[in-house]
Length: 56
Image (cartoon, rainbow, N blue to C red; front, side, top):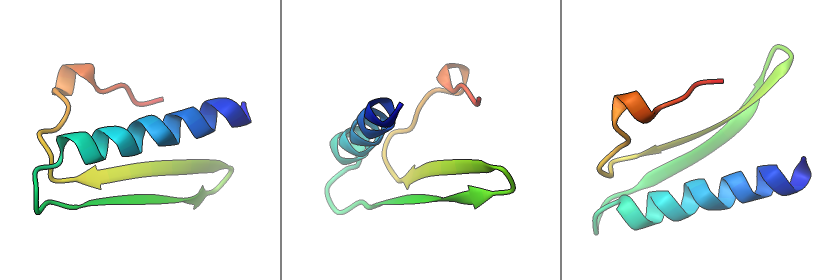
């Protein structure tokens, strides 16, 4: 599980860097809410089409 989480973080950061235009920025945040943890990436890149977003 630890390896999958590491891989997920690497992929998210790689995509944020790759798809954010020069001069843009991105924010990686993580935390805990009740009995869950979360990881969020916010950037001003081109985005993911709504139909491709999966929330688990």
